[in-house]
Length: 178
Image 1 (cartoon, rainbow, N blue to C red):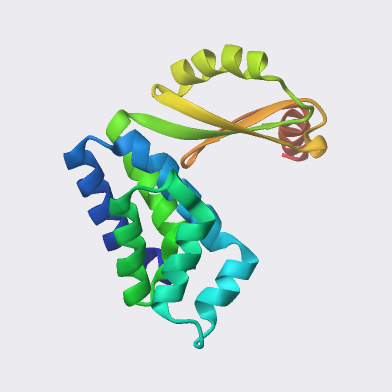
Image 2: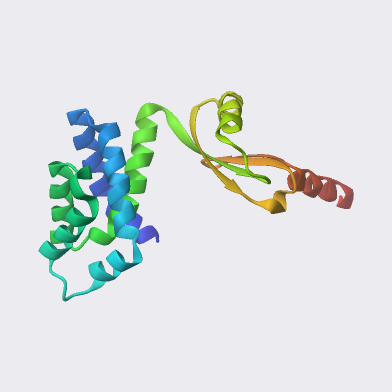
């Protein structure tokens, strides 16, 4: 939903600036991701949308769900979002925060889609090759799509590298039809 991202952006930017100024980019990253995961939980989403649940109860819910894994500053951030009826934006805030952090570090997210499961060693061997192709530092996530038949497809931002059998077959079919 584009509207929620638009509303979440100023919160994510403010949170990112505060983390950068305090030197806690990486530490807060883990905590913001955790908060986003808690907020994305269907039961928590229901509680957030329930008008009978007070803002203080929602903050207590997040405190109990996260325990000591979340700093006081981020608990205060949750309180701010709760007071402004914006807790539902936490997954978007977390995603935006991560994108700002990667940009600050000069890193981009790469989605590697493989026809077959690949282990961590294969991913570690593939990353330097992909970094040379995309000319940037990459953090990778891997998913499986058996429709690729073989090989991999890599998506980095708005760029795609298709080294899959399905991609080659599609390219051949297009060439034969022309």
